[in-house]
Amino acid sequence: MSLLKHTKRLVKQWKKQPRQLVVNMVDGKDGKTGHYVRVFMVQEYPPEIIAGYLDQLDGIVTHAGATLRKTIRYAQSDIKFNTRMKYKLNRLTASINDQSETDPARNAEIAAKETILALRDSTLSSDHKLVEVQTFLTISAPKLHQIEAAEAGMKLWFDNMSGKLNELKREQQEAMRQTTPAFDPYSDHSEFFNKTHYGRVTTDSVAARTYPMTRGSFSDSEGLYLGRRTEDGGFCFVNLCDPDDPRAQNVTVFGKTGEGKSYFLKALVVSLLEEGVHVFVFDLDGEWRELCSYVGGVYIDHTTEEGRYFEPLTIMPAITEIDEECAQYNRARYKMAEKSGVRTFSLLGENLTRPEIFEVGEAIRRVYRAAGIEKKQPETWNAPTGPKPTIHAVFHEIEEAAHSNADAKSLYDKIKIYFIGIYDDIFQIEEASSFDHKAPLVVYRVGSGEEDESKKDESAKQAQIKMSMAFEQVNANIHLLKIAGADFSAVLVDEGQRQLQNPELRSYVFTWYTAIRKQNGMMILAGNSPAIMLDTAAGVGMWENTSVRVYFYMEQSAVRLLSSHADLPSEIQELITQNEGTQRYILENHKRYDELIMHVPPEEHVLYKTRGLKTAG
Image: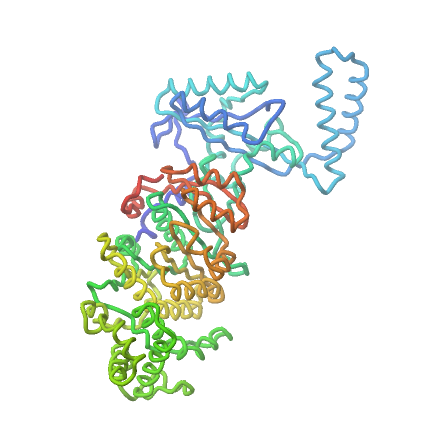
Protein backbone atom coordinates (compact mmCIF):
# COMPACT_ATOMS: atom_id res chain seq x y z
CA MET A 1 0.00 0.00 0.00
CA SER A 2 1.41 3.38 -0.98
CA LEU A 3 1.33 6.16 1.56
CA LEU A 4 1.05 8.71 -1.23
CA LYS A 5 -2.00 7.07 -2.76
CA HIS A 6 -3.95 5.67 0.16
CA THR A 7 -3.30 7.78 3.24
CA LYS A 8 -5.44 10.89 3.52
CA ARG A 9 -2.82 13.36 4.57
CA LEU A 10 -3.95 16.12 6.88
CA VAL A 11 -3.37 18.82 4.31
CA LYS A 12 -5.44 16.99 1.72
CA GLN A 13 -8.27 16.45 4.20
CA TRP A 14 -8.53 20.10 5.07
CA LYS A 15 -8.35 21.19 1.46
CA LYS A 16 -10.87 18.79 0.00
CA GLN A 17 -13.59 18.48 2.62
CA PRO A 18 -16.47 20.89 2.10
CA ARG A 19 -16.70 21.58 5.83
CA GLN A 20 -13.58 21.52 7.95
CA LEU A 21 -15.43 21.15 11.25
CA VAL A 22 -18.47 18.95 11.80
CA VAL A 23 -20.29 20.96 14.44
CA ASN A 24 -23.55 20.35 16.24
CA MET A 25 -25.23 23.74 15.90
CA VAL A 26 -27.16 23.26 19.15
CA ASP A 27 -24.24 22.86 21.53
CA GLY A 28 -21.30 23.99 19.33
CA LYS A 29 -19.42 20.70 19.74
CA ASP A 30 -16.86 19.49 17.20
CA GLY A 31 -17.99 16.07 16.00
CA LYS A 32 -14.43 14.98 15.18
CA THR A 33 -12.52 15.88 18.33
CA GLY A 34 -15.35 16.07 20.84
CA HIS A 35 -14.25 19.59 21.77
CA TYR A 36 -16.46 22.63 22.09
CA VAL A 37 -15.55 25.27 19.51
CA ARG A 38 -16.57 28.90 19.18
CA VAL A 39 -15.52 31.70 16.86
CA PHE A 40 -15.58 35.39 17.77
CA MET A 41 -14.86 38.49 15.73
CA VAL A 42 -13.24 41.69 16.90
CA GLN A 43 -16.05 44.16 16.26
CA GLU A 44 -14.44 47.19 17.91
CA TYR A 45 -10.67 47.44 18.23
CA PRO A 46 -8.93 48.99 21.24
CA PRO A 47 -8.11 52.69 20.68
CA GLU A 48 -4.38 51.94 20.60
CA ILE A 49 -2.88 48.83 19.03
CA ILE A 50 0.70 47.60 19.17
CA ALA A 51 2.16 44.68 17.23
CA GLY A 52 1.24 41.37 18.85
CA TYR A 53 -1.43 42.89 21.08
CA LEU A 54 -3.55 39.72 20.88
CA ASP A 55 -0.78 37.67 22.49
CA GLN A 56 -2.10 38.83 25.86
CA LEU A 57 -5.15 36.63 25.29
CA ASP A 58 -3.07 33.44 25.23
CA GLY A 59 -2.61 33.37 28.98
CA ILE A 60 -6.27 34.13 29.66
CA VAL A 61 -7.55 31.33 27.44
CA THR A 62 -4.93 28.80 28.54
CA HIS A 63 -5.68 29.48 32.21
CA ALA A 64 -9.30 28.53 31.53
CA GLY A 65 -8.19 25.18 30.07
CA ALA A 66 -8.94 26.12 26.46
CA THR A 67 -6.86 26.79 23.34
CA LEU A 68 -6.88 29.86 21.13
CA ARG A 69 -6.27 30.33 17.40
CA LYS A 70 -6.01 33.84 16.01
CA THR A 71 -7.00 34.42 12.38
CA ILE A 72 -6.31 37.81 10.83
CA ARG A 73 -7.60 38.34 7.29
CA TYR A 74 -6.44 41.17 5.07
CA ALA A 75 -8.17 42.15 1.86
CA GLN A 76 -7.89 45.13 -0.44
CA SER A 77 -10.75 47.49 0.25
CA ASP A 78 -12.98 48.74 -2.55
CA ILE A 79 -13.95 51.89 -0.64
CA LYS A 80 -13.34 55.07 -2.63
CA PHE A 81 -13.24 58.71 -1.59
CA ASN A 82 -16.26 59.77 -3.63
CA THR A 83 -18.77 62.60 -3.43
CA ARG A 84 -20.67 60.84 -0.66
CA MET A 85 -17.53 60.59 1.47
CA LYS A 86 -16.72 64.22 0.73
CA TYR A 87 -20.16 65.34 1.97
CA LYS A 88 -19.74 63.17 5.08
CA LEU A 89 -16.40 64.84 5.79
CA ASN A 90 -17.96 68.28 5.44
CA ARG A 91 -20.79 67.36 7.83
CA LEU A 92 -18.33 66.05 10.41
CA THR A 93 -16.22 69.21 10.14
CA ALA A 94 -19.26 71.41 10.66
CA SER A 95 -20.50 69.31 13.59
CA ILE A 96 -17.12 69.39 15.32
CA ASN A 97 -16.90 73.18 14.96
CA ASP A 98 -20.35 73.58 16.53
CA GLN A 99 -19.51 71.49 19.62
CA SER A 100 -17.60 72.50 22.71
CA GLU A 101 -14.34 70.74 23.60
CA THR A 102 -16.03 69.06 26.59
CA ASP A 103 -18.82 67.53 24.53
CA PRO A 104 -18.47 63.70 24.88
CA ALA A 105 -19.49 63.13 21.25
CA ARG A 106 -16.78 65.44 19.94
CA ASN A 107 -13.86 63.02 20.42
CA ALA A 108 -15.64 60.25 18.49
CA GLU A 109 -16.41 62.62 15.61
CA ILE A 110 -12.80 63.86 15.54
CA ALA A 111 -11.61 60.25 15.30
CA ALA A 112 -14.08 59.61 12.47
CA LYS A 113 -12.88 62.73 10.64
CA GLU A 114 -9.23 61.69 10.96
CA THR A 115 -10.09 58.28 9.56
CA ILE A 116 -11.84 59.77 6.53
CA LEU A 117 -8.90 62.13 5.95
CA ALA A 118 -6.53 59.15 6.04
CA LEU A 119 -8.71 57.33 3.53
CA ARG A 120 -8.76 60.40 1.29
CA ASP A 121 -5.00 60.78 1.44
CA SER A 122 -4.47 57.10 0.66
CA THR A 123 -6.38 57.43 -2.60
CA LEU A 124 -4.08 60.28 -3.64
CA SER A 125 -0.82 58.59 -2.66
CA SER A 126 0.82 55.53 -4.20
CA ASP A 127 2.62 54.85 -0.91
CA HIS A 128 -0.49 53.71 0.93
CA LYS A 129 -3.30 51.32 0.17
CA LEU A 130 -6.66 50.79 1.81
CA VAL A 131 -6.93 47.46 3.57
CA GLU A 132 -9.88 45.76 5.21
CA VAL A 133 -8.88 43.90 8.36
CA GLN A 134 -10.94 41.13 9.95
CA THR A 135 -9.74 39.55 13.18
CA PHE A 136 -11.27 36.27 14.37
CA LEU A 137 -10.59 34.37 17.58
CA THR A 138 -11.35 30.63 17.67
CA ILE A 139 -11.40 28.95 21.08
CA SER A 140 -11.82 25.24 21.80
CA ALA A 141 -11.96 23.16 24.98
CA PRO A 142 -12.96 19.62 25.98
CA LYS A 143 -15.41 20.86 28.65
CA LEU A 144 -18.28 23.32 28.33
CA HIS A 145 -17.36 25.23 31.49
CA GLN A 146 -13.81 25.71 30.15
CA ILE A 147 -14.90 27.31 26.91
CA GLU A 148 -17.37 29.52 28.77
CA ALA A 149 -14.65 30.65 31.17
CA ALA A 150 -12.35 31.42 28.23
CA GLU A 151 -15.12 33.39 26.52
CA ALA A 152 -15.83 35.39 29.66
CA GLY A 153 -12.12 36.16 30.11
CA MET A 154 -11.74 37.39 26.53
CA LYS A 155 -14.84 39.58 26.73
CA LEU A 156 -13.61 41.13 29.99
CA TRP A 157 -10.20 41.83 28.46
CA PHE A 158 -11.72 43.58 25.43
CA ASP A 159 -14.08 45.52 27.67
CA ASN A 160 -11.14 46.75 29.77
CA MET A 161 -9.32 47.70 26.56
CA SER A 162 -12.35 49.65 25.26
CA GLY A 163 -12.90 47.07 22.56
CA LYS A 164 -15.75 44.69 21.76
CA LEU A 165 -16.24 41.12 20.53
CA ASN A 166 -19.00 39.93 18.22
CA GLU A 167 -20.24 36.45 19.18
CA LEU A 168 -21.48 35.64 15.65
CA LYS A 169 -24.25 33.59 17.24
CA ARG A 170 -26.11 32.90 13.99
CA GLU A 171 -23.03 32.48 11.81
CA GLN A 172 -20.83 30.03 13.73
CA GLN A 173 -20.76 27.39 11.02
CA GLU A 174 -19.78 29.83 8.29
CA ALA A 175 -17.24 31.48 10.60
CA MET A 176 -15.61 28.13 11.31
CA ARG A 177 -15.52 27.22 7.64
CA GLN A 178 -13.98 30.52 6.58
CA THR A 179 -11.39 30.72 9.37
CA THR A 180 -9.96 27.21 9.11
CA PRO A 181 -6.17 27.02 8.59
CA ALA A 182 -6.59 25.82 4.99
CA PHE A 183 -9.18 28.47 4.06
CA ASP A 184 -9.34 29.09 0.33
CA PRO A 185 -9.99 32.80 -0.33
CA TYR A 186 -11.27 31.95 -3.81
CA SER A 187 -13.98 29.53 -2.70
CA ASP A 188 -17.56 30.28 -3.64
CA HIS A 189 -18.94 30.24 -0.11
CA SER A 190 -21.16 32.99 1.27
CA GLU A 191 -20.09 36.63 1.30
CA PHE A 192 -19.30 36.28 4.99
CA PHE A 193 -16.31 38.59 5.01
CA ASN A 194 -17.82 41.16 2.67
CA LYS A 195 -20.66 42.35 4.85
CA THR A 196 -20.30 46.02 5.48
CA HIS A 197 -20.54 45.79 9.27
CA TYR A 198 -17.58 43.39 9.49
CA GLY A 199 -13.93 44.30 9.41
CA ARG A 200 -12.16 47.61 9.70
CA VAL A 201 -11.01 49.65 6.73
CA THR A 202 -7.70 51.38 7.28
CA THR A 203 -4.40 52.09 5.57
CA ASP A 204 -1.84 49.34 5.11
CA SER A 205 0.59 51.00 7.53
CA VAL A 206 -2.02 51.02 10.29
CA ALA A 207 -3.12 47.46 9.46
CA ALA A 208 0.45 46.32 9.96
CA ARG A 209 0.12 47.12 13.67
CA THR A 210 -2.44 44.34 14.04
CA TYR A 211 0.11 41.79 12.86
CA PRO A 212 2.91 40.17 14.92
CA MET A 213 5.70 41.33 12.65
CA THR A 214 8.35 38.70 13.53
CA ARG A 215 5.92 35.85 12.90
CA GLY A 216 4.35 36.83 9.62
CA SER A 217 2.91 34.27 7.23
CA PHE A 218 4.15 34.02 3.66
CA SER A 219 2.39 30.86 2.56
CA ASP A 220 2.07 30.35 -1.19
CA SER A 221 -1.18 29.21 -2.76
CA GLU A 222 0.51 25.95 -3.80
CA GLY A 223 3.70 24.01 -3.21
CA LEU A 224 5.29 21.95 -0.45
CA TYR A 225 3.63 21.58 2.92
CA LEU A 226 6.22 22.79 5.45
CA GLY A 227 4.19 22.82 8.65
CA ARG A 228 1.57 24.78 10.56
CA ARG A 229 1.94 28.24 12.01
CA THR A 230 2.22 28.34 15.78
CA GLU A 231 0.47 31.72 15.73
CA ASP A 232 -2.86 30.61 14.31
CA GLY A 233 -2.56 26.99 13.17
CA GLY A 234 -2.53 28.01 9.52
CA PHE A 235 -0.84 25.78 6.96
CA CYS A 236 2.36 27.00 5.33
CA PHE A 237 3.07 26.09 1.70
CA VAL A 238 6.21 27.14 -0.19
CA ASN A 239 6.48 26.59 -3.94
CA LEU A 240 10.00 25.25 -4.48
CA CYS A 241 9.07 23.33 -7.62
CA ASP A 242 8.46 26.16 -10.05
CA PRO A 243 10.57 25.43 -13.18
CA ASP A 244 10.21 29.08 -14.20
CA ASP A 245 11.87 30.34 -11.01
CA PRO A 246 15.58 30.90 -11.80
CA ARG A 247 16.64 31.02 -8.15
CA ALA A 248 18.37 28.07 -6.49
CA GLN A 249 15.80 26.19 -4.41
CA ASN A 250 18.11 24.48 -1.93
CA VAL A 251 17.13 23.83 1.68
CA THR A 252 19.22 23.76 4.85
CA VAL A 253 17.95 22.48 8.20
CA PHE A 254 19.83 23.12 11.44
CA GLY A 255 19.01 22.05 14.97
CA LYS A 256 20.30 20.26 18.02
CA THR A 257 19.87 16.48 18.10
CA GLY A 258 16.47 15.44 19.44
CA GLU A 259 14.64 18.66 18.59
CA GLY A 260 12.64 17.26 15.65
CA LYS A 261 15.00 17.77 12.72
CA SER A 262 14.80 14.21 11.31
CA TYR A 263 11.04 14.14 11.84
CA PHE A 264 10.70 17.33 9.81
CA LEU A 265 12.93 15.98 7.03
CA LYS A 266 10.75 12.90 6.57
CA ALA A 267 7.61 15.02 6.39
CA LEU A 268 9.39 17.30 3.90
CA VAL A 269 10.32 14.32 1.72
CA VAL A 270 6.69 13.14 1.66
CA SER A 271 5.68 16.67 0.63
CA LEU A 272 8.22 16.50 -2.19
CA LEU A 273 6.92 13.11 -3.30
CA GLU A 274 3.37 14.44 -3.38
CA GLU A 275 4.56 17.19 -5.74
CA GLY A 276 6.06 14.58 -8.08
CA VAL A 277 9.68 15.25 -7.11
CA HIS A 278 12.09 12.29 -7.24
CA VAL A 279 14.07 12.19 -4.00
CA PHE A 280 17.47 10.62 -3.25
CA VAL A 281 18.40 10.25 0.42
CA PHE A 282 21.74 9.37 2.02
CA ASP A 283 20.77 7.48 5.17
CA LEU A 284 23.46 7.25 7.83
CA ASP A 285 21.61 5.45 10.63
CA GLY A 286 19.04 3.30 8.84
CA GLU A 287 16.12 5.57 9.79
CA TRP A 288 14.55 5.74 6.32
CA ARG A 289 13.94 2.06 5.55
CA GLU A 290 10.34 1.88 6.78
CA LEU A 291 9.21 5.09 5.08
CA CYS A 292 10.98 4.08 1.86
CA SER A 293 9.16 0.75 1.83
CA TYR A 294 5.81 2.37 2.58
CA VAL A 295 5.97 4.79 -0.36
CA GLY A 296 7.20 2.15 -2.80
CA GLY A 297 10.77 3.40 -2.96
CA VAL A 298 14.08 1.62 -3.51
CA TYR A 299 16.34 1.03 -0.50
CA ILE A 300 20.00 0.32 -1.28
CA ASP A 301 22.02 -0.88 1.72
CA HIS A 302 25.72 -0.11 1.32
CA THR A 303 26.78 -0.65 4.93
CA THR A 304 29.86 -2.67 5.82
CA GLU A 305 27.72 -5.65 6.79
CA GLU A 306 26.33 -5.85 3.26
CA GLY A 307 29.62 -5.08 1.50
CA ARG A 308 27.84 -3.53 -1.48
CA TYR A 309 29.24 -0.52 -3.28
CA PHE A 310 29.08 1.47 -6.50
CA GLU A 311 32.30 1.11 -8.48
CA PRO A 312 33.76 4.64 -8.64
CA LEU A 313 35.77 3.87 -11.81
CA THR A 314 32.65 3.02 -13.82
CA ILE A 315 32.19 5.52 -16.64
CA MET A 316 28.50 6.35 -16.71
CA PRO A 317 26.58 5.75 -19.97
CA ALA A 318 26.05 8.67 -22.32
CA ILE A 319 22.71 10.44 -22.13
CA THR A 320 20.55 12.06 -24.80
CA GLU A 321 21.90 15.52 -25.55
CA ILE A 322 18.77 17.62 -25.28
CA ASP A 323 20.78 20.73 -24.39
CA GLU A 324 24.35 21.93 -23.91
CA GLU A 325 24.33 20.87 -20.25
CA CYS A 326 23.75 17.27 -21.31
CA ALA A 327 26.48 17.52 -23.93
CA GLN A 328 28.91 18.82 -21.32
CA TYR A 329 27.95 15.95 -19.03
CA ASN A 330 28.73 13.41 -21.78
CA ARG A 331 32.13 14.97 -22.45
CA ALA A 332 33.00 14.96 -18.75
CA ARG A 333 32.11 11.31 -17.99
CA TYR A 334 35.68 10.01 -18.13
CA LYS A 335 36.95 12.86 -15.96
CA MET A 336 34.16 12.35 -13.42
CA ALA A 337 34.99 8.65 -13.07
CA GLU A 338 38.70 9.44 -12.76
CA LYS A 339 38.02 12.06 -10.08
CA SER A 340 35.66 9.71 -8.28
CA GLY A 341 38.42 7.10 -8.13
CA VAL A 342 40.96 9.59 -6.80
CA ARG A 343 38.46 10.87 -4.24
CA THR A 344 37.75 7.31 -3.07
CA PHE A 345 41.42 6.55 -2.42
CA SER A 346 41.89 9.97 -0.80
CA LEU A 347 39.09 9.13 1.62
CA LEU A 348 40.52 5.67 2.28
CA GLY A 349 44.04 6.94 2.90
CA GLU A 350 43.18 10.22 4.65
CA ASN A 351 45.44 13.24 4.26
CA LEU A 352 47.30 11.88 1.25
CA THR A 353 50.36 13.82 0.14
CA ARG A 354 50.63 15.21 -3.38
CA PRO A 355 53.07 12.45 -4.43
CA GLU A 356 50.67 9.81 -3.06
CA ILE A 357 47.75 11.33 -4.97
CA PHE A 358 49.95 11.27 -8.08
CA GLU A 359 50.47 7.53 -7.59
CA VAL A 360 46.71 7.01 -7.30
CA GLY A 361 46.14 8.85 -10.58
CA GLU A 362 48.85 6.90 -12.39
CA ALA A 363 47.47 3.57 -11.14
CA ILE A 364 43.97 4.52 -12.34
CA ARG A 365 45.29 5.45 -15.78
CA ARG A 366 47.15 2.14 -16.07
CA VAL A 367 43.95 0.25 -15.20
CA TYR A 368 41.97 2.20 -17.82
CA ARG A 369 44.61 1.57 -20.49
CA ALA A 370 44.62 -2.15 -19.65
CA ALA A 371 40.85 -2.13 -20.22
CA GLY A 372 41.28 -0.48 -23.63
CA ILE A 373 39.79 2.83 -22.46
CA GLU A 374 41.42 5.96 -23.86
CA LYS A 375 40.71 9.36 -22.36
CA LYS A 376 40.41 11.13 -25.73
CA GLN A 377 38.37 8.40 -27.42
CA PRO A 378 34.80 8.46 -25.99
CA GLU A 379 33.82 5.49 -28.15
CA THR A 380 36.04 3.30 -25.93
CA TRP A 381 34.55 4.43 -22.62
CA ASN A 382 31.56 2.09 -22.46
CA ALA A 383 33.01 -0.88 -24.37
CA PRO A 384 36.25 -1.91 -22.65
CA THR A 385 38.14 -4.65 -24.46
CA GLY A 386 40.21 -5.65 -21.43
CA PRO A 387 39.59 -6.31 -17.72
CA LYS A 388 36.88 -4.17 -16.13
CA PRO A 389 38.34 -1.15 -14.28
CA THR A 390 37.82 -1.50 -10.51
CA ILE A 391 39.31 -0.11 -7.33
CA HIS A 392 40.58 -3.63 -6.60
CA ALA A 393 42.58 -3.52 -9.83
CA VAL A 394 43.92 -0.09 -8.87
CA PHE A 395 44.98 -1.44 -5.46
CA HIS A 396 46.92 -4.26 -7.14
CA GLU A 397 48.66 -1.69 -9.36
CA ILE A 398 49.62 0.31 -6.27
CA GLU A 399 50.77 -2.89 -4.54
CA GLU A 400 53.06 -3.73 -7.46
CA ALA A 401 54.46 -0.20 -7.61
CA ALA A 402 55.13 -0.26 -3.86
CA HIS A 403 57.99 -2.73 -4.37
CA SER A 404 60.14 -0.05 -6.03
CA ASN A 405 58.44 3.31 -5.31
CA ALA A 406 58.54 4.94 -1.86
CA ASP A 407 55.47 7.11 -2.49
CA ALA A 408 53.48 4.11 -3.70
CA LYS A 409 54.69 2.18 -0.61
CA SER A 410 53.44 4.85 1.82
CA LEU A 411 50.14 5.00 -0.08
CA TYR A 412 49.87 1.20 0.01
CA ASP A 413 50.39 1.12 3.78
CA LYS A 414 47.57 3.65 4.29
CA ILE A 415 44.94 1.81 2.23
CA LYS A 416 45.79 -1.89 2.48
CA ILE A 417 43.55 -2.40 5.53
CA TYR A 418 40.52 -1.99 3.22
CA PHE A 419 41.66 -4.59 0.68
CA ILE A 420 43.66 -7.23 2.56
CA GLY A 421 43.07 -6.23 6.19
CA ILE A 422 40.32 -6.20 8.80
CA TYR A 423 38.06 -3.93 6.70
CA ASP A 424 38.36 -5.91 3.47
CA ASP A 425 34.63 -6.67 3.56
CA ILE A 426 33.37 -3.20 2.67
CA PHE A 427 33.94 -3.69 -1.09
CA GLN A 428 32.60 -7.20 -1.65
CA ILE A 429 29.68 -6.84 -4.08
CA GLU A 430 29.58 -4.27 -6.87
CA GLU A 431 26.13 -2.72 -7.29
CA ALA A 432 24.84 -2.48 -10.85
CA SER A 433 24.42 1.00 -12.28
CA SER A 434 20.67 1.12 -12.74
CA PHE A 435 17.70 3.26 -11.89
CA ASP A 436 13.96 2.73 -11.75
CA HIS A 437 12.26 5.86 -13.11
CA LYS A 438 9.05 4.82 -11.38
CA ALA A 439 10.64 4.76 -7.91
CA PRO A 440 9.61 7.99 -6.15
CA LEU A 441 12.25 7.63 -3.45
CA VAL A 442 15.73 6.09 -3.57
CA VAL A 443 17.53 5.71 -0.24
CA TYR A 444 21.21 4.87 0.02
CA ARG A 445 22.10 3.55 3.42
CA VAL A 446 25.77 4.46 3.75
CA GLY A 447 26.36 4.10 7.51
CA SER A 448 25.66 1.69 10.33
CA GLY A 449 25.02 4.20 13.09
CA GLU A 450 27.76 3.00 15.45
CA GLU A 451 27.15 3.81 19.12
CA ASP A 452 30.54 2.47 20.28
CA GLU A 453 32.76 5.56 20.63
CA SER A 454 35.86 3.56 19.65
CA LYS A 455 34.24 2.63 16.34
CA LYS A 456 32.48 5.90 15.52
CA ASP A 457 35.36 7.54 13.64
CA GLU A 458 35.92 4.53 11.38
CA SER A 459 32.19 4.08 10.88
CA ALA A 460 31.81 7.72 9.84
CA LYS A 461 34.76 7.39 7.47
CA GLN A 462 33.30 4.34 5.76
CA ALA A 463 29.93 6.10 5.46
CA GLN A 464 31.65 9.03 3.75
CA ILE A 465 33.35 6.63 1.32
CA LYS A 466 30.08 4.88 0.43
CA MET A 467 28.33 8.22 -0.01
CA SER A 468 31.11 9.47 -2.29
CA MET A 469 30.82 6.31 -4.41
CA ALA A 470 27.08 6.86 -4.83
CA PHE A 471 27.44 10.51 -5.90
CA GLU A 472 28.04 9.83 -9.58
CA GLN A 473 25.12 7.38 -9.66
CA VAL A 474 22.79 10.02 -8.26
CA ASN A 475 24.24 12.69 -10.55
CA ALA A 476 23.62 10.51 -13.62
CA ASN A 477 20.10 9.68 -12.48
CA ILE A 478 19.26 13.35 -12.04
CA HIS A 479 20.37 13.98 -15.63
CA LEU A 480 18.25 11.04 -16.81
CA LEU A 481 15.24 12.38 -14.93
CA LYS A 482 15.63 15.74 -16.62
CA ILE A 483 15.66 14.04 -20.01
CA ALA A 484 12.59 12.01 -19.02
CA GLY A 485 10.74 15.28 -18.40
CA ALA A 486 10.73 15.29 -14.60
CA ASP A 487 10.31 18.79 -13.22
CA PHE A 488 12.50 18.36 -10.17
CA SER A 489 14.82 16.02 -8.29
CA ALA A 490 16.04 16.43 -4.74
CA VAL A 491 19.07 15.08 -2.89
CA LEU A 492 18.99 14.94 0.91
CA VAL A 493 22.07 14.63 3.12
CA ASP A 494 21.23 14.30 6.82
CA GLU A 495 23.70 14.38 9.71
CA GLY A 496 25.90 16.78 7.76
CA GLN A 497 28.21 17.28 10.73
CA ARG A 498 29.14 13.59 10.44
CA GLN A 499 28.90 13.11 6.69
CA LEU A 500 31.00 16.12 5.71
CA GLN A 501 33.94 15.81 8.08
CA ASN A 502 36.32 15.15 5.22
CA PRO A 503 37.32 18.44 3.49
CA GLU A 504 37.45 16.86 0.03
CA LEU A 505 33.99 15.34 0.36
CA ARG A 506 32.64 18.59 1.78
CA SER A 507 34.08 20.55 -1.14
CA TYR A 508 32.45 18.17 -3.62
CA VAL A 509 29.05 18.48 -1.95
CA PHE A 510 29.32 22.27 -1.88
CA THR A 511 30.09 22.34 -5.61
CA TRP A 512 27.15 20.06 -6.26
CA TYR A 513 24.97 22.32 -4.13
CA THR A 514 25.60 25.19 -6.52
CA ALA A 515 25.40 23.27 -9.81
CA ILE A 516 22.42 20.99 -9.19
CA ARG A 517 19.90 23.70 -10.08
CA LYS A 518 20.94 23.44 -13.74
CA GLN A 519 19.56 19.89 -13.78
CA ASN A 520 16.23 20.87 -12.18
CA GLY A 521 17.54 19.62 -8.86
CA MET A 522 17.71 20.83 -5.30
CA MET A 523 19.93 19.93 -2.36
CA ILE A 524 18.69 19.48 1.20
CA LEU A 525 21.41 19.53 3.86
CA ALA A 526 20.76 19.03 7.56
CA GLY A 527 23.09 19.25 10.54
CA ASN A 528 23.21 20.17 14.21
CA SER A 529 25.11 23.41 13.65
CA PRO A 530 25.57 25.96 10.84
CA ALA A 531 29.32 25.56 11.34
CA ILE A 532 29.36 22.81 8.69
CA MET A 533 28.67 25.56 6.13
CA LEU A 534 29.85 28.82 7.62
CA ASP A 535 33.36 27.77 8.66
CA THR A 536 34.65 27.73 5.06
CA ALA A 537 34.51 30.11 2.10
CA ALA A 538 32.95 27.38 -0.05
CA GLY A 539 30.34 26.78 2.62
CA VAL A 540 29.44 30.46 2.73
CA GLY A 541 28.85 30.33 -1.02
CA MET A 542 26.65 27.32 -0.46
CA TRP A 543 24.76 29.26 2.21
CA GLU A 544 24.08 32.03 -0.27
CA ASN A 545 22.64 29.50 -2.74
CA THR A 546 19.98 28.45 -0.25
CA SER A 547 16.39 29.64 -0.59
CA VAL A 548 14.85 27.99 2.44
CA ARG A 549 16.49 27.69 5.85
CA VAL A 550 14.95 25.93 8.82
CA TYR A 551 16.15 26.60 12.37
CA PHE A 552 15.27 24.27 15.22
CA TYR A 553 16.53 24.95 18.72
CA MET A 554 20.29 25.51 18.84
CA GLU A 555 22.74 26.45 21.58
CA GLN A 556 23.72 30.09 22.00
CA SER A 557 27.15 29.47 20.43
CA ALA A 558 25.55 28.12 17.24
CA VAL A 559 23.13 31.05 17.07
CA ARG A 560 26.00 33.51 17.51
CA LEU A 561 27.84 31.88 14.62
CA LEU A 562 24.67 32.09 12.56
CA SER A 563 24.14 35.77 13.33
CA SER A 564 27.76 36.62 12.51
CA HIS A 565 27.37 35.36 8.93
CA ALA A 566 23.72 36.17 8.24
CA ASP A 567 21.44 39.14 8.62
CA LEU A 568 19.18 37.35 11.10
CA PRO A 569 16.81 39.62 13.09
CA SER A 570 17.41 39.60 16.85
CA GLU A 571 13.79 38.53 17.43
CA ILE A 572 14.37 35.41 15.35
CA GLN A 573 17.60 34.62 17.17
CA GLU A 574 15.77 34.87 20.48
CA LEU A 575 12.98 32.56 19.29
CA ILE A 576 15.51 29.92 18.20
CA THR A 577 17.11 29.83 21.64
CA GLN A 578 13.71 29.66 23.36
CA ASN A 579 12.37 26.67 21.40
CA GLU A 580 14.18 23.91 23.30
CA GLY A 581 11.97 20.82 23.62
CA THR A 582 9.02 22.39 21.76
CA GLN A 583 9.60 20.83 18.30
CA ARG A 584 8.94 24.31 16.89
CA TYR A 585 11.16 25.76 14.19
CA ILE A 586 11.75 29.02 12.38
CA LEU A 587 11.29 28.94 8.62
CA GLU A 588 13.21 31.48 6.56
CA ASN A 589 12.33 31.98 2.91
CA HIS A 590 14.05 34.83 1.08
CA LYS A 591 14.36 36.93 4.27
CA ARG A 592 10.79 36.22 5.35
CA TYR A 593 10.24 34.36 8.61
CA ASP A 594 7.57 32.25 10.27
CA GLU A 595 7.42 29.97 13.30
CA LEU A 596 5.97 26.53 12.52
CA ILE A 597 5.43 23.07 13.94
CA MET A 598 5.14 19.92 11.82
CA HIS A 599 1.74 18.26 12.14
CA VAL A 600 0.93 15.06 10.25
CA PRO A 601 -1.69 12.29 10.59
CA PRO A 602 -1.03 9.38 12.99
CA GLU A 603 -0.28 6.96 10.15
CA GLU A 604 2.60 9.18 9.05
CA HIS A 605 3.72 9.98 12.58
CA VAL A 606 4.60 6.36 13.33
CA LEU A 607 6.87 6.29 10.25
CA TYR A 608 8.75 9.43 11.22
CA LYS A 609 9.68 8.66 14.84
CA THR A 610 13.46 8.47 15.30
CA ARG A 611 15.88 7.79 18.09
CA GLY A 612 15.76 10.27 20.91
CA LEU A 613 12.89 12.26 19.40
CA LYS A 614 10.16 13.71 21.53
CA THR A 615 6.61 13.55 20.22
CA ALA A 616 6.00 16.18 17.57
CA GLY A 617 2.80 17.75 16.42
